[in-house]
Length: 114
Length: 112
Image 1 (tube, each protein chain N blue to C red):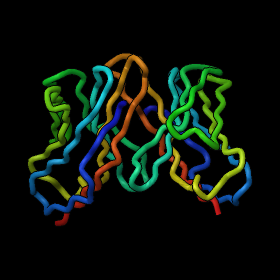
Image 2 (cartoon, chains in turn red, orange):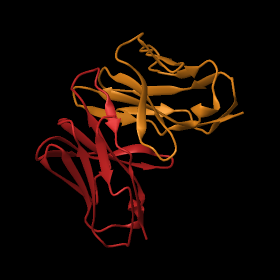
Image 3 (cartoon, rainbow over the protein chains, first blue to last red):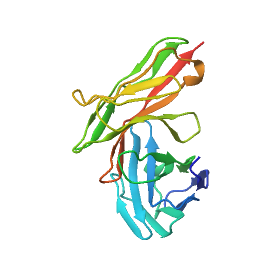
Image 4 (cartoon, rainbow over the protein chains, first blue to last red):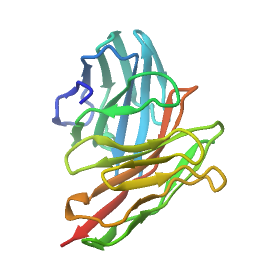
């Protein structure tokens, strides 16, 4: 258990509304990530952060923004949700840099955009 | 580019059968390799890993060997159980960029 929580765990929203997902960690890890999981695509990286206020884009960042104002919190925002953003979203952290590093995942947030 | 390719599922086996799930990778650097498992409704959990060529990762009866010459990291288990039913993901880490790349996942169904 890497002390990662995600909120909400489930959300249903309507097209065009803003949505914010929260990832919270308790162990002060530097690197945090947001992925989405869709059938046939596995996990795809949306955004990641390598420190407070330091973020970068992943392979599927369009339509998403992130913020990290504190080490423990990494927020993912859908500015105007679309049906194509219906997915399961996972937050992850890595504990240390280097070849032995391992990624640890939160429990996921299931988002449905109607 | 960097990518991971896994065999498509679902894979359906009877209990106590031998399991192989193939994984090959393409990487611009010298990656570390991982297998993760995802049970229904949960996040991914680390199953095993290997950080250099010829290393063998093992855990809970599962094994995988880092084969640099064939760029592969196949997952094996000698005798599967119903409780092994899950989705398995192969992944690579380019640690100098702190980026992970995941395969698309292989669903395993084990029947009693």
